Length: 323
Image 1 (cartoon, one colour):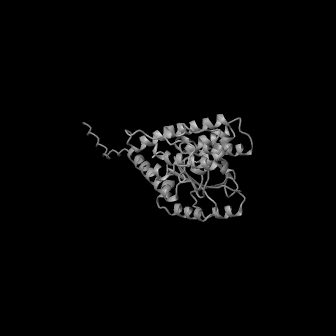
Image 2 (cartoon, rainbow, N blue to C red):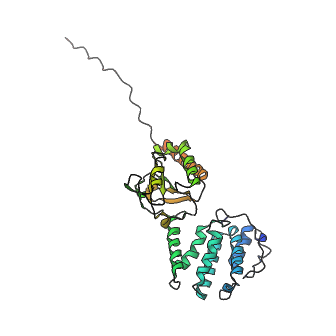
């Protein structure tokens, strides 16, 4: 499957009438699902007319829905190439229509109501608006902000460093956290699901073991005002071995569709690579339990055992002196 979390829909389950394209038909010798899907995706936009198609947004929405329903079954390279083909066609015809295209793409693959989420696939649509000199206006600024968020927080990217304020008013930075594995936990003290996630993390018997061993840090960040009394009071309930702070501009750096929001970072060599995100707390716990168990086992087998002490020997008696 190409897109993580994609809904299990076949192309046949989506209506093909009323589309803005003529649906490609794979040749009969193609029998594999990925092969046939890749053929359709590759040629999907060949008959698309970018000049007339934006006069019927309902049909455009339906057409993009059809495209995204087939995309999970095609190869990744084919899908990305097809998306760029569409964007190139629209941009050359009328750059302002890229905003409409991005808006529809967001509803299909980057919103809370999307059947599946793919930031990697959504990024080209955002990029086309954010970095196009012909596109003007406030909506462009919105997509420029989204572009920065996606670039900062996509899986495989390096999470940005930032300064946070601790409950006692002192400051820290994400880069101060030296553990190789970091769970970045964005939460709201007033959020019921956040409180459940906090309780679940705090109750997991393995978490303090990993933290005390120095291989894991949990960084709990309130994306609000550090002087908020609720944040300061709630911080007292968090485990003492967690890193706790507030950072009001967190949503400018990180995508946060829901709260709690987890980012699991590989902090080897201080790179803070985003490995996992947008997962329920139990999945996060299972993931780092697996990874950290392996890390601890590896450490225990590679650390040399202390050298055995030589057995004690008695001092030899002095030889008798000849008279």
